[in-house]
Length: 200
Image 1 (cartoon, helix red, strand yellow):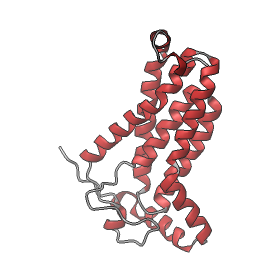
Image 2 (image 1 turned 60 degrees about the horizontal axis):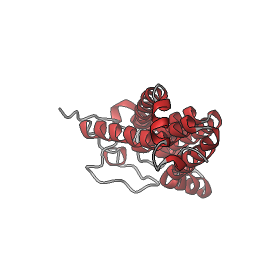
Image 3 (image 1 turned 135 degrees about the horizontal axis):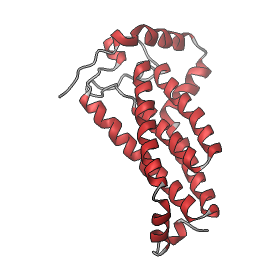
């Protein structure tokens, strides 16, 4: 069953207010937010790599948790994309005909929930299981990513909120499941040629 969601009736006025503020803001701010919106997900990949590198010095179990983070993010993205296919919400830039910083995506590039927000939130949650400090950094970055997607006009506020919830919940569930099994996984992996991935 496909649900055609009309996002404008939920928080369309808030969306137009944010997009209007973006149009009135200094060019340097808009350029910075646009760049973050487009390329900021790379920061989460770097944080996960740093987490894995540090975890190898702690022990094999910590390294398994760190190595799982990117796979958990991919799983969260897959779940979010499935929801997107089931809920056909047209992008706000098409429904409300607003001028946005980011070019309006195609008609079948659905808006709900935000993939960027889901990926960022999933990475932040997964990183909390690896390192509290990296998790905090990633959480701040994820909030900035969610806000940026509305600022550039790609999503309604409820799209990014749903993306954060979806990505965060999937990541939390998977990382908790892994936490009960990382010892056994670590022993199996250290007995193979993949041992260098877990111990320095």
